[in-house]
Length: 144
Image (cartoon, rainbow, N blue to C red; front, side, top):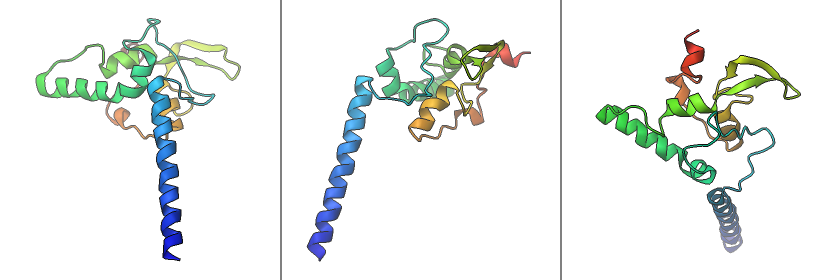
């Protein structure tokens, strides 16, 4: 009986490890499906500061490195600053059929239904807490 239980748990562990490694491999190749509701905007400039596959894999490292530069050395801005991400990736409000509802009120990147950050993080079951402190819309919206 003990041998059968041990074999069961070993096979279960092997299956979970295989699935996890397969997901990491797909994410590294930039081919991970993010679901039908994922917002894949390249931003207002038309081009991100890094290739898509690199951003999917390393965006948190970029943000943490920029945070450390800001907190420890007072260096603000830069290509990987959260503010720059927000300014570029907030999206305009669209209706159910995709029609533009408002050109002057963008969707917060943290909007739970279709914000740029939340669509992927919800799909990946990752909880982000950036916006407990940071504003999730650009300065143009917050200054109104």
